[in-house]
Amino acid sequence: MSEQIEKKNNEKREIPVVTPKVDIMETETIVYLVAEMPGVSEKNVDIDLQGNNLTIRGSTVPDSGQTEPTRSEYYPEKAYERQFTLGNSIDLANISANMKDGILRLTLPKVKEHSPRKIEVKCC
Image (cartoon, rainbow, N blue to C red; front, side, top):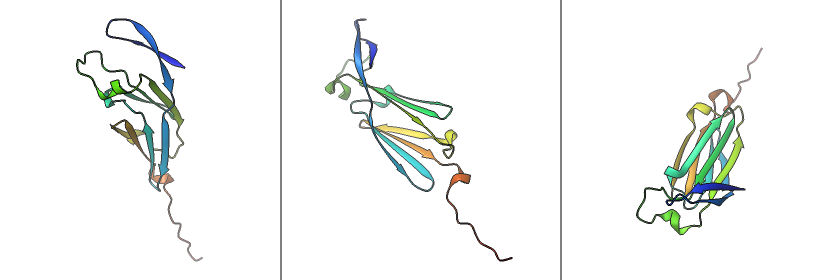
């Protein structure tokens, strides 16, 4: 799979689209998703949520207005894309994300009623 990009001089070329490596960790109240996207800055990350489908995209292509070399220019140009289907236990309205040093971290809180709880047993 590849994606067409437009360079500064209006020439178009294709760059490869790869699947980023992702770690998924879960606690009783939160699911953490950590994606490795080397060379991608927060400006070049796109996160879409449509229904229960979460899609992350990123690109190492530098912004067309930049004049100084950026970290992304030290990596081969590529685009990242990966999609996840979220279960009903995720609070879709409160998902958050941050990007630092090519690592995208998403925090997916669980809805309160799906959090584990202890059920008390009562006598007759």
